[in-house]
Image 1 (cartoon, rainbow over the protein chains, first blue to last red):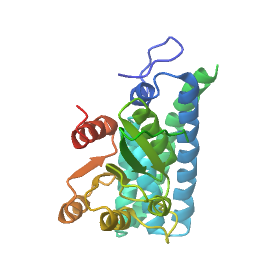
Image 2: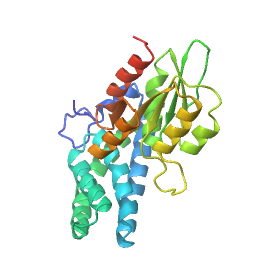
Image 3: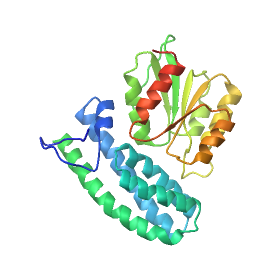
Length: 126
Length: 135
């Protein structure tokens, strides 16, 4: 089931049906959960760039791992797949040249996800 | 984080999860279970410091405190728990897809490992119900 907001059924990247169910469709709790999800995701995304520039592949792998679980949970499988690849490369850095491209692709994918999450969050706060 | 309550007839479940988003979701989920009291911990060391009461079940994240190199990981927390309360059941939770991780846990005697994907809370719920004989 895809999440529907503002009375419009849209094809979204994010699937918040599990979160909505757990939080009993409570708008305040949902807004809090999305705020936490988005702030954590922003923090881990910043870490990906930081650890990449520092060439700290172990910590890059761990940040990708943390973010991957969240992306999977909200149904963003393409973003999760890019993060999974970064996680694996970080653990076994023989294809480190791919990291820049993966970061670029993830950034592009995440911009859509972030926009959708922001719109949904705004609808809860309205 | 949300409060917890306890009565002696309830089953005591500890959750050790360093990801605040998932920890809060799990707390909210188990709030609706009348036969369970949940004690949440965001850090492995906080869990180990408060291990005075024997839990019926522990839900334990495999990778803990990733940005703190000195913090105990899920495996270390598991060994410390088993040392003190060998009978306590443990369900490992993680986003690790690696078969090596699964084999490693099997070698440790861990029976239950839940992958954090879209439906993981449903799978976790089934295991919790089974372990605590709540059905």
